[in-house]
Image (cartoon, rainbow, N blue to C red; front, side, top):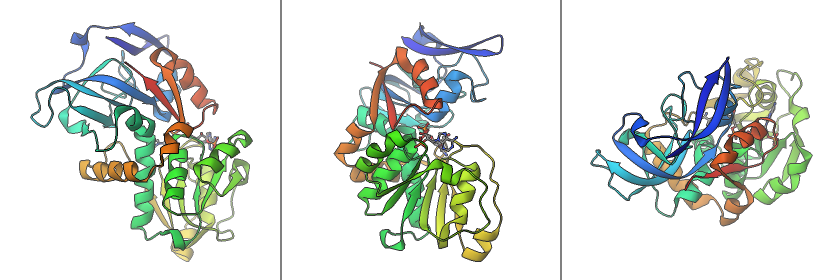
Length: 325
Ligand code: NDP
């Protein structure tokens, strides 16, 4: 089997496509022939070594994959069944999806939701699942299309693009924040009604600013999230899932105690199975067909390392789909 293998040499991470014996796969109840994987922000950090994602080497990266069960010792799965996986530390501390085969715990797998195939599942990937979990968090906080505008930061990335498309399909008026003027046509096509420059959110914000947003999906963190919090309407909800700008949060308690703002963290890695399934079902139902073309760049396994560097240089829009076999 071919796999992208991460190794360490003199403190640097090297990423090479190698031929491995399937005997080298880690323990697990289900072996999957991987058809598609994706490149997420976390994969890019792992592959380039720019983030401390991987601590044991050699490691096969790839935090998500879709494919067909080759062998199963878990009665819930059978040979030939289509499955997908996101999260659970796969591609971080257990060999992941950027390989022709993966062996994982049955508990980590999701049967392919009705109406989805492996390719579409990985166009959505971890990023899209996270976007849906963010929207579910807004809804659970009482945000509805008639509550007011929703803002999405890091809008042209994987999570951001999917959030813009989903929110627009659900009838929300969406404002996208992007650092790149080149992405404006793309974001309008996905359904954004307005686009604001990232610089407007990158400076120190005052504790409270003019109220603008009923809801927010934040993939950036740091000053961007602090600015968003200061601009939330009374009773607004922010779903925070990312740290593309940084992991700090230089804010005050003012939005919370004077405007009743709710800040809801969102994690996709260990989200419970029922919640994942609910999110996948809604993704299938809500994402328009056009999204799958508009938001996708398809690459081969050998291109994954170069694309990871591009992703961290903010040169990629939407989702990067990796064709494995
Ligand atoms: P992408 O790289 O695809 O998208 C990130 C986007 O953020 C970029 O496209 C860019 O959008 C924007 N951005 C880049 N640099 C900065 C910066 N310095 N300041 C502000 N914005 C910036 O990544 P993903 O969409 O895959 O992931 C986004 C974030 O969400 C990451 O931090 C990731 O770790 C996190 N994440 C969290 C998950 C969870 O379970 N909590 C799951 C998946 C992702 P633009 O050019 O439009 O400004």
